[in-house]
Image (cartoon, rainbow, N blue to C red; front, top):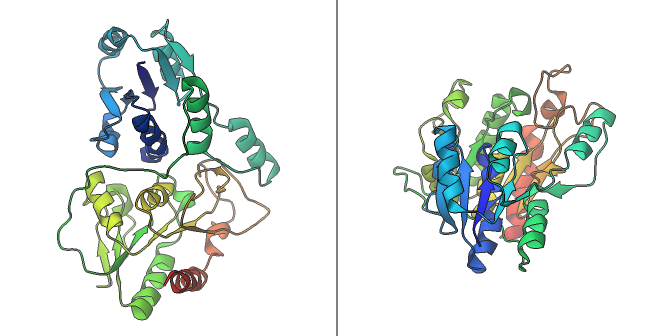
Length: 315
């Protein structure tokens, strides 16, 4: 059986598929991927993936190459115009479009309610099991081929203060305050991860911080998280990478809800404030009318206390 996964999205959209790839690997089923080159490194080296195709390449050449593969099933996880066009042109392959609970999330934003929670890995897995008639438990995310990053301290935690949407970012000075308290209590340093855009936020000038925003590849990021003590993140990508390496993760939610599909499934502690204006968006898009009150009411002292309590119980 030949299978194609279509997923154009960002890093987090790909990482949520890695548990499914692990189950397919155990069932000796390999898939091909149609995705963006920008995120190829995330899945590079995954033994469950047979071939990669990239949307940046010529559309018509892609169609020719894809049709030669004669896929039996195409799973379109994007459900957008371009992905739909690709899948239609790959007929007679069966086309499956796993649900994404979009209506449920939109209604939650409209009515300001907390919906029944779900995780994208889980609902995608149900579609895979049904269509491929396979069994197995859904594991945590799984990432391959970390690249060693030199010069790290012996003991450190990781902060992911960035993200695609400004409205989802916990204040930098809150991260700095939290870092100072953790350094004083645990005698650890704090490694700051993110991309070049996140670097523009400034901050983290104290010597207790190792600011690597915009300085690491994806594989190096994986290595850094793998060897850390724990992770604090307002970015769901940081949460998922931490879960891949079974690291305690402290996830901060503002305008969105953990019930929207990216809630920690493992060693996770969630921070959120139940304000009347939440949720105000599905992904964190748009401008905040209330000066990010939902995030600013999550104080560094509160996060610090939960981290210390969690680590004390684990030890």
